[in-house]
Length: 449
Image 1 (cartoon, rainbow, N blue to C red):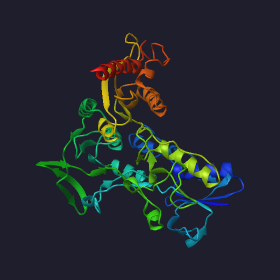
Image 2 (cartoon, rainbow, N blue to C red):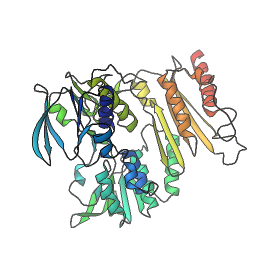
Image 3 (tube, rainbow, N blue to C red):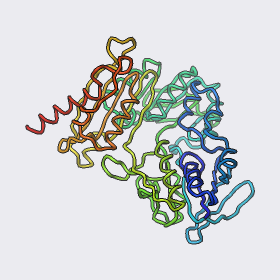
Image 4 (spheres, rainbow, N blue to C red):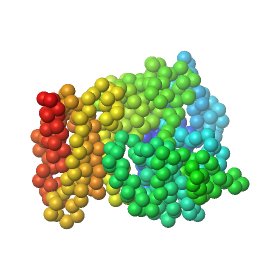
């Protein structure tokens, strides 16, 4: 059996590795358009900021590990241009020229690319960050940059704002809407804004770039409203576009955000063809709807599922709970589940409550505030959303809440869990349990009113 995987990052190499493990006798081939496979895109902002000093440490495994130990035939700088499902062939353009290759099963893991507004096209000094090649380019630019404008106040935008600031660059963020970070509670957003300003970052919400100033084709600044902001570096972080065109041209169906539509086995509408990672849809476990949520953890799991099924397995991928966590200077910020708006659109009746406790016992040195907002459905009292923010302990508690949503726990269940306790790690009353108790009381009052 011959399995071809298109794309060599998280989903692609996970698929190839699982296919090889489950079917040692099969031929497993990977075609990767770029120069690297199996690397940490999530670690790139921390390399820019100097937290991660070694470029090579971002590469999970050297190419030789796959081609040697794992016996996977990996071709870098090799772009698949076309899929022919009837003949079960792909057309490949590589340094060796154009050729066709035959498959018995195919996994499409072509990822996504940064969305770049048309007005930025063709200008020098405009950067995005999706690949290691782009990382090398932007690292060179940072060495001489003095002023940076970041377009977009999402997770990557804020991580890059901190990274640029650590490199001594003056940063301004321009966000078209009034929101910072998707899914974040509005009151928590104010704390994030204050943190950014305290660290010298200028953030402009409900703003857009009206004019791009350039000299000899290189950006020198931007104008928003009546204000001019100098910039020798413009970083664009306004979302991604799935690289699904090759699939569409082959008759493969797409769904949300034009990502390849797959089922829980990562199968497309064409038998023997699977898709995984940032190019594919996934299922939101909280509301049961198809969604597009490109993150590394899901990509790896989807890749494993696709690879296992490509060699005759019966694996299923449950989906996501929309779990995200980010560090913004001294803040840790997390969210999981649905926002109130998403909950209403999904037919829930969201009820929320917010508490502020401490990350550890209040008398223990270094204890800091931690804020937790929980959201439940009024009718079922099921936990459907959460926001957390503090200076420590956020990710630990976020994972507890993600597990609760995966298990479809009720708010009352969260009051009964036997949480770990020791003064260096938590107050006697775990903040999640406190937040759940407050929300449960609110649900009971509303349910009897």
